[in-house]
Image (cartoon, rainbow, N blue to C red):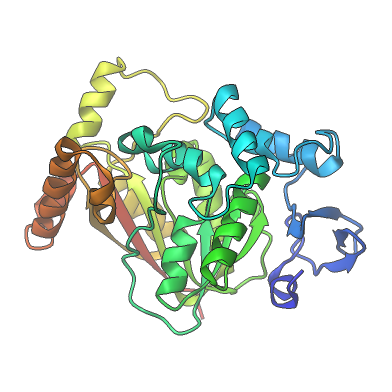
Length: 345
């Protein structure tokens, strides 16, 4: 394990230092965390897990998934059994050049509905544009990194990214991608509610299409711990869904305004976002990420059929227009919440 990563890690239970003991990280209170295929598994066994895939990762860490799944495909979320079998077949075939087989199929669950048609057919990695200034060695945390697209985007802008996700299989794919592209990214299996990092470690904490799936109570737990690991005047950039977005309203009407459960999206009002993020992190502003859904990236327009490209182009046009007409933020479907940490002196 990279010594620089070990220096930043702490026990997620008590924030005490960790030492490497064989294939485990241990704190002075003897809390032990396995290291699997070079990846620290920092999930808490006794905490209720937000996702089934976290439970599968814990089983993989304990060795109970068996040795016939070296890519830990069973820990991948949002896939059918048939899709997992196809990933295994491609991985074991060793096809060489091309898009990683795990990314081929995770692109649907992680990037959104417009990407479903690309599953198993990707020819290039869909790396988005990170809406942050260029940096020179600033440390960047990606909460819910999955296969690493935002870590790659951050590294290309000069950040030193560390990605966390509860899926061991996704994190391993992210590491393969970073290695393939020659980028200095590091990865940890961890729970966003119990961040295993020292206080004041990160210049930027980022999360996209993740906290929207948490209950509002659990999302607030994540934000409070995010504030702990941010440096003074560090930046938090989090994508969240707007309750009053026109497309979101249509989706809620079609669903009968049913109560969100499990991994369903929770919608937040803009005023609610501003109040919660300001209280838990610091001064907060809202800006538009996009319209007509959640997760659509203008940088990926070339990957879509013509009728989808029109949607993406219109969304990006309206986003740019919203920079001059601030009221348009109130009806956008996807918002960026930008906060600056201000600790009391």
